Image (cartoon, rainbow, N blue to C red; front, top):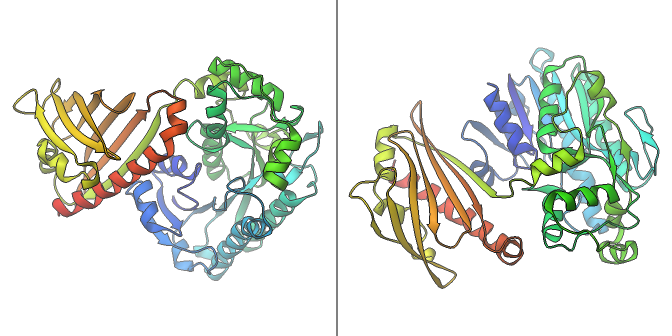
Length: 454
């Protein structure tokens, strides 16, 4: 099936796109920033530029069997000023309306059969201990108003003969993004604690399960309407706090008082102080099986690996043998590294690279000279090699280089897993700076590799 995805570079979009491709689907990603998207998404994605304040060209939807609509400004990205509240609303409602309007211009025989739109458990508002499911009425307040308008536009697709579903998503748990990433640093430092009274309910779901639920809905033509994307066992904030502390082996004794949060965050503090006790009755009745139904086991698995991860792909018009030879010359690493790093290869332990070779480098990180030694752990000519830092600026650095023959050239995939020293303090001090530098380095690497292997 051909699937059109908006919001493909977001927390849910990136792994969802990869899973769709693994299952043999083809993808078109709607994006307002194609340059950013081409760096973050697999090369097999077609990209269509689309700004949320403009109509969508219907040709972007031709041939699609389904649309997955994830786009929307971050709810917790900044303080809720009147202007930003309008941005939150319009980025969801206007884009959904534009997608449905584009579908309407297509002949009935060419329309996608399915629209799966994101929504949120904010639909229900703050409901205390009330048990909520997809039949429960909306709550009152800003987020329920947003979700109500958002879903109304998505369900308008039904009038066009399109099956429409809206995933009312809870708190998505993943250590590399979203709410859990934000919580990890204070909890790892031992300064985490309950929020407010701790009695508010948290309806959560792991990233793996929410991606699986999107895939499930694509395949289940009999499921439509609202679907709660939450694990079957919601917990209170106090319970969540206790389990996260237990998973990390840290105390959780420092609560965040409600008055202080309201002063610091304004209306947005309601995201933390209010809650919903939501159950996924539609998903369970349809036969969906959660991989992570219970919080303790989910948090234990999620916190077992807190390495950072970076994946980049590009297609170069050369055969794998030639591309691999290029990477077999350590001097070419200098050509792929931006000058601000002052990167130089000092020497290798063997005349030609192979498994077991060590390579010494010199570089400069923001004016600080650094020596780096790496070990080639794996060496499969024309296919892949893996190098691991032995000494250098990272606590851990493992870089897997993969080369895959494709029509017209070679898919080059870089997969980096890294961790900073003195974590989590190192993450606080330098995490954002390092992540930004790595984005710059790999953007430069992409451009130079494309130029050198034309």
